[in-house]
Length: 636
Image (cartoon, rainbow, N blue to C red; front, side):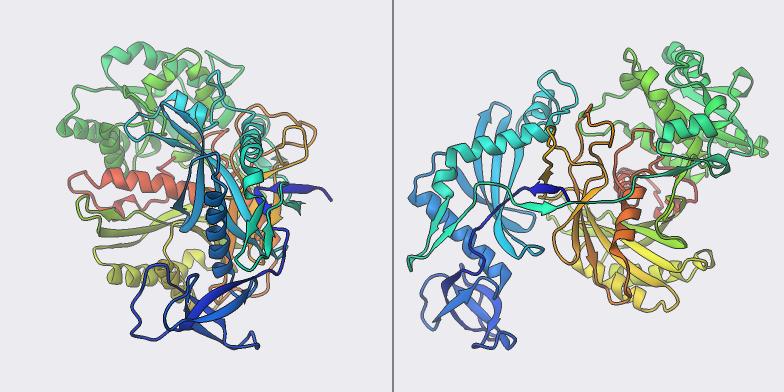
């Protein structure tokens, strides 16, 4: 079986010990600086434990105690970080370094290279790899942009997102590996041996830890007449969508007169006349007729809210007068996009919200982005796909691993006061899917101004949704929770599912922005797509993107692996974790935003998008949260 090298520098010793000073924790003890609280054995019986205050320095009232590495993992990690910092200081490290807090834990950050735009940083953070019962240090890279400078192409180059020519960095893995090795060449001799006061030594190994890699199945997509394929685009092209739109469609093009020429280009591209090689046409791909007879022009006279509402009313009247047809707005806007995926203006959000409120579909087309040479050519298929899904069509689903399985992607979008930093509004929602990736609905779970009311409403509404008749056929419910969800929210969710007796529950935390990475032994260093490794009894690292068997070439920057953790909320029975990992992976292929859309499970990705929308909708006068609840995926 092949191995993957995780970004962990292991410690050679497996059961080392170290000295601390401790005293029993009492209720009235005041928190002191550099004094920590841990559960430690009282004596030789490791099972009998109590809560102690712990210091690495001698203190009055504290007794000396020898801690073995396995007594308290958190304390051992803290000890390793402290001793590494002391060693670096004693050895006068050749690179500048400091202790920083990231991912709720402290780490040591080294400045590897400095630029006008910022600095390239290598970090070391103590870690316990439960699967191998080994301690070590996670070694990772990031670019820290100077706060007073704007986001730029140079920043993306230094962060390894783009190559030096400004293209997607297909050498992302090997470039990252080179920077880590460059760091180790400079400082490894200074960190190799960690000295203790008692003369015992702890050795950090030079090579990254290896761990066995396992393989999930490739994503398989289902199209018309249950035909299957491994490519969404070729599947649609060869077999047609899973479910077509039954009604005739009216396309309402909304634009300023100055964009008349571009609107014509867009129309010709959608019909397949401009670039049939990249997009053969709406009718050929999706079975939706598009010609001059079912296209309406709605001019933009101004951008005041009054003028924009006139546009909404015009489309609403058109839909009401053609009730046997389906109307979609195609809004062409001129808005300067930036590098952080913010591609729409407040005018668009205002239109979008009011279209949703009136149960109308709307597709934005950014002229600044798609008006560039060849941009429209390569983007038309993605535009058409999103439009088709917004109008109620089902392009494809993925072949599920678990049948009769409901998936709830839970998200939140809390509002803070800019001056005080306190949360003034608590908002949560759920994206309801099944394990095939079929979108069911979006439901608001809570909208409150106090945390107590928020948690209670969250719990009650989740119970209500799970008891809904629409969910009656499901035997299993899987909750996909984002990394940022708070423990109190998880507890409220746990209380809710305890009240449902006739369905099994599995809760999974999906962390897209995590500290883990891994390198294969292939010359590209990239693991194969669908690879996964086990980190602990409940934690896995999965590669949603990677090499394809028979096509071991990299033609774009591939995303980081995804950290997945199974949470024990008290109701899940014995289950095959591999099946649920497979469904998380599958859902990354159920993204209807584009044929090459981000390889992220839609249960989490759609929640991220909705959070951005709700944040923008908040500033609209008269905004009603429940108006976004909709059985159509308006957020695509």
